[in-house]
Image (cartoon, rainbow, N blue to C red; front, side, top):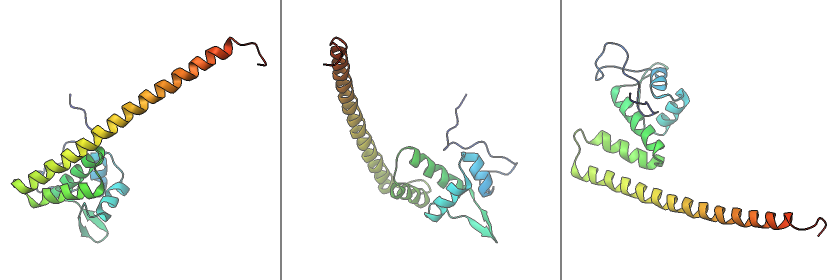
Length: 150
């Protein structure tokens, strides 16, 4: 059984093929398990560009995919600028081109290197905490052996 995450939408509802299907903000919010406010934020940031009918936003398949890429980027720790760059690459390449794919690989390599640095920092911090904890336990044990008032 496949486990859904926030960037894995539920199957499309309705009988329309995905290419012609449109979505309301509520449908996308439910599909990706985010709030409508989150979707509006990404719209304000230029990551989504729904059509409008009066006050109603109408999202197309392209917007659904852009939201999926945005949420995945967020989950992976990408900045809004990095997410925007990936989304723009998606828009520009129907089948991909070497320059855009190379740039995507560079972004991924940078992100991976940053995560490796953070992981090493976490390991170092963990060792330091272990050391402080060990010393605190030793001092506590030595205090238990002393008579009160010393």
